[in-house]
Length: 355
Image (cartoon, rainbow, N blue to C red; front, side):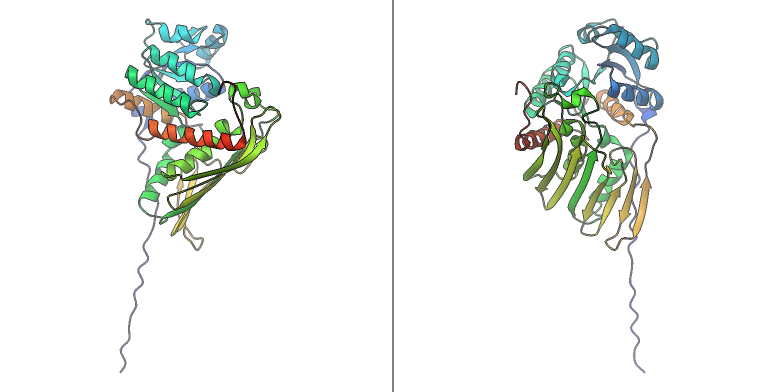
C-alpha cells in the first residue's frame, strides 16, 4: 500500500494595523494666535473648535475688521489685531503658539516675527519659498528655544499612521513603486496668488507638496529627481510630473492647478500594495491588496471634516512635553522636502523674485 503524502499549505493572514493616533480632545489645551485669517486659517479654526480643546485667543490681520469678523465667527472673546506685530507683542494676551497662515512668500518673515517674540510657531506648508529660508527660520527657533513645525497636516492623520505601520511590518514586502497625484482646476480662474510669482505661486508649493511629501515619507533616501512641466505666462508652474528614485524605490508623482485629477495614491511592494482613495491626503480609505488583486483588508478613515486638528494637537503635545520639534515632522524632513522642491523648480525654470 503506497504512502499518501499530505501537504498542508498555511496562508498567513495579512491585516492592516489600527492607527496609534491619540484622541485629539485629550491633548493639552494651548492658547493660539492666528496670523492671516484667510481660507486655510478658516479651515484650521473650524477643525480646531470642532474636535479639540485648543483655544484661539488672538487673530491678526492687516485689516482689523477682517480679524474681528474671524473672531466673531470662530473665537468669541478673542482679541483682534490690525497688524501681526501687535499680536505677537501683546503681553496681556498670553499666546502660547502662533499659526502662520499667510501666503508662502510671507512665511519666513511672519515666522521670524513670532519667534523673535518668543512664541512657538506652526507654519503653514509649504514651510517657506525655499530651503535657505527654511533653514533661517529653523535656526532662529533653535536660538530662541521655541518649538516650530511645518503644517504638513496629512502626516498626522490616522490613515497615514496605518500606512507607515503596514510598511514597517512588511505587509506589502519591500516598497518598489509609489504613485500619487494632486490636481485641482484652480487656474486661471482661481485664487490670484496661485499665478503670482511674487507670492510664490504655482502648483508645486500649493498642491504638489502633497504627493511629494507623501513619497518622501516613504522614501528616506532620494538619489535622483527628474521633473518636467508647463509654465504659465507669469512664469510659475501650471503642472508637472516628478520622478524620484532612491533606496530601491521609484515614485511617479503629478500635480496641476489647471484641471481636476483623481487625487489617489498607490504604494506597491514585492508582496502587495496599498491603495488610497481620493483624496488620498484627506482622511480616506486604505486597502491592502495582494499581488493577485485580492483585497485583504480595508481601513476606513473617511471623515467629512478637513482634519487639520491632528497637526494642532501634535503641536500641543510636543510643546507640553518640552520638545522643540515633532518626531513625525522633524526639521530635517522639512529641509529635505524643501530641498527637493528647490531642485524641481530649478529643473522647471521657476524662480521667485529676490531668489
